[in-house]
Amino acid sequence: AQSVTQLGSHVSVSEGALVLLRCNYSSSVPPYLFWYVQYPNQGLQLLLKYTTGATLVKGINGFEAEFKKSETSFHLTKPSAHMSDAAEYFCAVSDRRGYSTLTFGKGTMLLVSP
Amino acid sequence: DGGITQSPKYLFRKEGQNVTLSCEQNLNHDAMYWYRQDPGQGLRLIYYSQIVNDFQKGDIAEGYSVSREKKESFPLTVTSAQKNPTAFYLCASSRPLDTGELFFGEGSRLTVL
Image 1 (cartoon, rainbow over the protein chains, first blue to last red):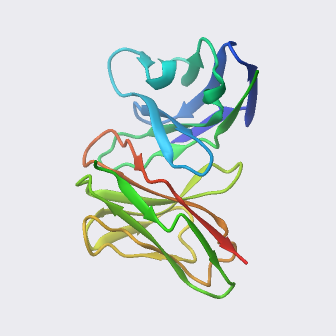
Image 2 (cartoon, rainbow over the protein chains, first blue to last red):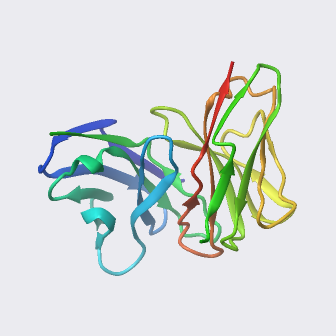
Image 3 (tube, each protein chain N blue to C red):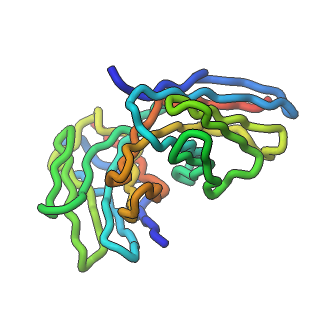
């Protein structure tokens, strides 16, 4: 069985500060890993994903994440927060087995203050 | 443009009534999914379908029903047996034998009065 833990249901940063959202996973097989963003009353939009190859993955809106197998982590970062980054972020893991279903973390709400 | 369309966006119903949420996709994806979202609980899988005329229960299927008569359509019925139906419902689809990446609709918010 696979699972995802996102540390912190809410993270607050100032505009221009570093954004760090934490995600740890468990999986019995090498995983595919995802970060999604959700704005209020909207669906989820893919930020970035790790499948194979380079462990540092770059996504949209200046976000990136690094897959660390030894730490079973896939933390999301952005060097400088913008007000428009305020949203809820979800980490997810796939077990790579054909028609697998993603397992989501409970989400982290990012609050950005001026 | 290809995508997933959910309707209605907002829906109100009285207790004891069934309600059906529509989900249509033109991405030519084989698999479709329904998730329920509640504050602080993330996304929970209700039902999924990998192929027409076949579907499987997810983690919280009780009180819900689905059909998959066409590849493009995967409607969800919230029945009167669902004890706490007020939630945000998300439909998604995925490509076959892919990474598991999901493509989401804009969601439907159901409120039971």
